[in-house]
Image (tube, rainbow, N blue to C red):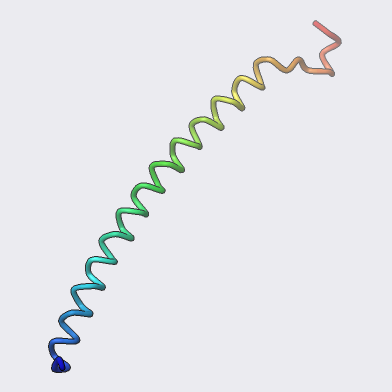
Length: 59
């Protein structure tokens, strides 16, 4: 049986490791969000260029 100090040390080590994993996940998700924003901006820019203005009279 472990002492309360050993249990606390083990839990602390686990929580530190889990925190590091979650921080890595946040970093990866932030990069993915940025990548997807860039894709959306490119698609939106292409749509603006290709879509004629219906109010321009076809000119």
